[in-house]
Length: 236
Ligand code: NAD
Image 1 (cartoon, protein in one colour):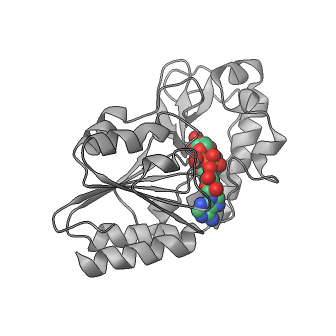
Image 2 (cartoon, rainbow, N blue to C red):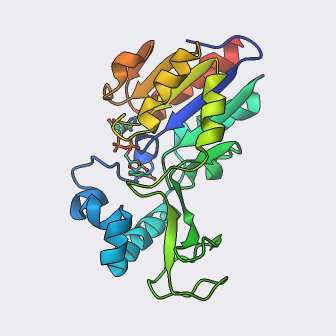
């Protein structure tokens, strides 16, 4: 499952790649997500109902993210980008910035990022402060409609045109630490396969879409990813 010279790699990452950095996954039994109802904190309707609760949730996640460090999986993907003789694009569902802090530059945050704020009234974006509040005024239009710049259920993920274009010409698609339960990301393997790419899944357990991959490897991302990157770089 290693690409040949001048090939391109698209890597999809999910919460599992940040699990060993101490950021809980969606399905962790003791994670943030178990203390909050998804419909309350990750939908536009939940924000309309209770913006204070939503900000409380994302402020806590921003604080945890600031205290977390990239793990060997993030570091290996940054090493791949630097050392690979073709193109490497990381498409992440994560709203943390651990790929960037590990050194990856070609990172596409399809579900937005904790580090940015968005005005729900005018669409203006700015760097998020450590703590946001429901009545913070937008620096652009002054409306108190500040929300995290994250994509909620029912909203269109970001960069879909760029991601689909990359998937349609990719040689190798690798999915890391994602359960394959959230679309459209869960459908990326099929787009890449239809375009003739080889496909590899690296996950703690077989994902919901495991059967769509040419190869799956089970284990912790912090172990599997560095080993896979070493092989790619040694055989290119
Ligand atoms: P998920 O929680 O549904 O799935 C995580 C997957 O990672 C699971 O299949 C699990 O088996 C696997 N996993 C757990 N620990 C692992 C490890 N150490 N190594 C390898 N795999 C491991 O998360 P998802 O698929 O990313 O999708 C759910 C949604 O949750 C996404 O929209 C995402 O934006 C959001 N989310 C993001 C973060 C973050 O930004 N760090 C954290 C939690 C959830």
